[in-house]
Amino acid sequence: MNQKRNTLRVLAGGALAAATAGLLAACSGDEKPQFKSIDLTGADYAKDFSLADQNGKVRTVKDFAGKVVVVFFGYTQCPDVCPTSMAELAQIKKNLGADGDKLQAVFISVDPERDTPEVLKAYMGNFDPSFLALRPTMEQLPQVTKDFKIYYKKVDGKTPGSYSMDHTAGSYVFDIKGNLRLYSRYGNDVAGFTSDIRQLLKSA
Image 1: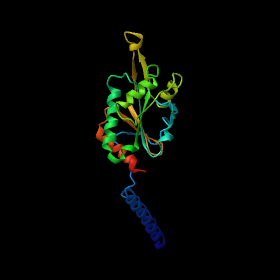
Image 2: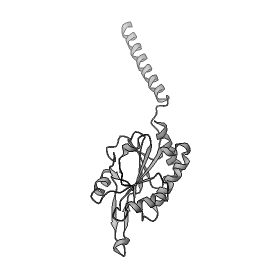
Image 3: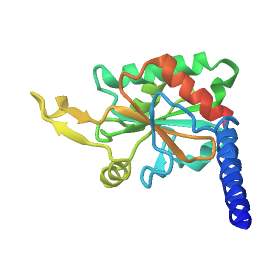
Image 4: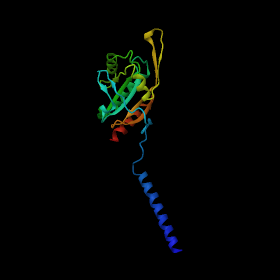
């Protein structure tokens, strides 16, 4: 009988030790980061791209190792969402101060028909000279938007050249190792988005 009681004490003590260890681990600061954006860590899509930029150089996510990469799909003749999003990224870069150079904004056109390299180069110049614009070919566009789960649709205007583009408005964020981590919806406040990027930079 005494042997049985001793066994129960050992088992109970072991359970208590395990629970205590779990509690200490939870308080050790190893908790999952709390982001304002949607956490996509481990997602099996939007892993990479291989597209020419406004200077004709083919770019992939791996080119920006050591930087947080923010990818936005849009088009240069977009009246509001696209310029607002790019202006906010320029502001975030300024907010980061000395770490601003560790942020790489990438704009992928959903309107390569009108967004020529010259047009894209001028457009990026309106926001920040370090920002890159990628121009898929008409053949590449369906695949890259599928890979990133981006919706886009051409909406006819009054003339053949005055059409607009409906498209997903949001940004994908890759960490400094090139892994997809976040999705920031359009309208996410600049302070919150800046905080998310700071967290990714600190996780180096």
